[in-house]
Every structure is written in structure tokens, then in C-alpha cells.
Length: 154
Image (cartoon, rainbow, N blue to C red; front, side):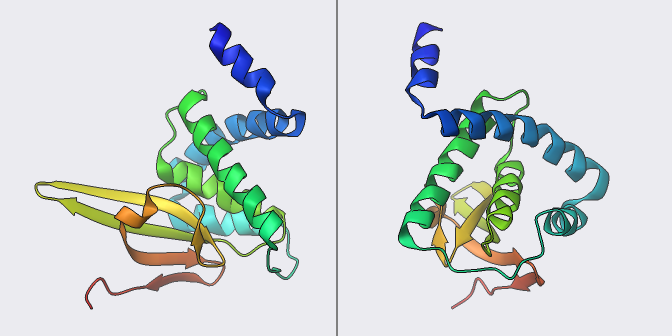
């Protein structure tokens, strides 16, 4: 416990605030997914995240978005509920849209012999914000215009 407290206080004040907000947001996303499903939840998140035209992020803002992705993953590990990658990605999607960007929700798969794995993550301007996404083959991207299918075959 003392180590967790030390790590908490090592965060910048604005990061502590963001982390608390993310921890509070994950149960809301989980409830929305149960009630509405993925596509209707995304539409609701888009409507509630502001209507301004998206803008390009500068390198500093991309770095901030990566840090927000790290804090979202931390909230998913330490929060009140077990947060799947989809819940985390949807919350980060909403946050980045609130900041005026045009993130994309990516869905992908990986086949390791007998094990099949699926994963959801966020890309901003074509760059994955989390870690480990390169191991997954994206098959769909979902953004403000809805899903776009991507072929998994060359």
C-alpha cells in the first residue's frame, strides 16, 4: 500500500485528477455497453463529446494523448470494475473527442496457434496510443462516420 501511495503522489496534480475521472468513467462506459451495445454507445459518446470540427494534434498533444492512454489503462487495472480493452478504448475515444481530435477505435485479432485473441485500441492520426497493438491484425476501424471494414487478406 505505501508503494501505491508513493506512486499516486508521484503523479502530477492534473494527472491525478484525470486518473480519478477515468476511474469514475469506466463504470459508466460498462453500463452504456450493457444497455446500448457498441455502436449506439459510440454514437452517444460522439454526441456528448462536442461538435467542433476535429483538428490535427501537434506532437506535444500526441504525447499527451499517449499519456492519457497510459492513465486509462492504469484506471482499468486499479479502478472499481474490471475494465476490458473495449471499455478503456471507448473512454479514451470520448476524452480525445472532447479535446477536439478525431480518434479511431480499432478492433483487431491475433491467432497464436490454438489461442484466439481480440483487442480494441485507439489510434490518433494513424498512430496507436497504447502498447502491444502491433501484435493484432486490425479488421475494422470505427470513427465518427461509423465502421469501415478492412480486409485481413493481402
